[in-house]
Image (cartoon, rainbow, N blue to C red; front, side, top):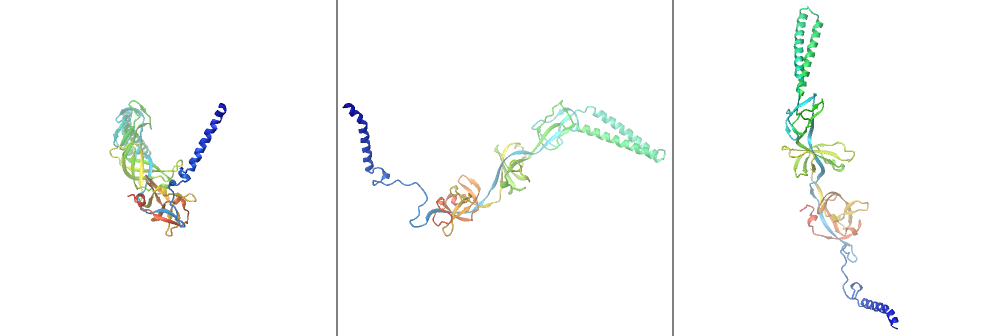
Length: 374
């Protein structure tokens, strides 16, 4: 008998729990089942429509203001020019007067090659020139007195001219042993060292012209139409330096790999504190254009995928107007394509369709609604 009682005990517990749940449900103590308690507040949604009336939406009026737009492009700094100074005659480097980082003026000596036998050859060529000059004068006098043929005078004149050319060539050779800076700038590289041998065309030094400095950036296809040579621009370097300058070059053709256009901004660098190869940001201000500053929440997609806003016309009918986003800030977006003054649905725009008549509830303009940033 005890065994039978123990086998029925689980069923008795189950029946007791079931009876308690049924009595609890019947008491109406669960709010959403009734029982006189208030149902929970529904989550926030679109404004409710008045019974038998049009759907209610909230709207704000926005007015266009002048927006100072700008083109922003990433780039880097480059020297105005980079000149390779090369040897114009062969020889051993005898002296080096500049090192990397030195500032040079045009005509300053950088490297001097040894003279070798050049002075001796110059003396020899000058002696030949003197002899040819004497022979020519004698032949001219004999020809004048008709004691010599005119052809001898012509031959002596040719020898005289050749002697003069040889002297000039040797003087150039001697002058070329002094390798000088062709421009004002800063020595960027100087591979030549005393004792090294330079052939004709070998590199003695590289001079960079750092004043003015160039800021090179690449502007996209959609923006390049607004950039012109002579426009003002501003460069912001990753080092914290900033400078204003002028656009000096806009590429006539795009880079085939990136489909962007090279733009060069020339900025003054008199103290040469800006360095070449530094990452920079180029900003080109554009003429002021009328635009609306809107909260991002009012933007919707049209039936064809266009970005736009839903507005209310004078007859309280809903209209979709596409917009073009021109800029973005921390608290809104700048758009173009709207009338100067427009009434935009700010709450409920997702629940209405084109042409639907609504009941607009005007929301007081504040913050972004002013569209002027104040």
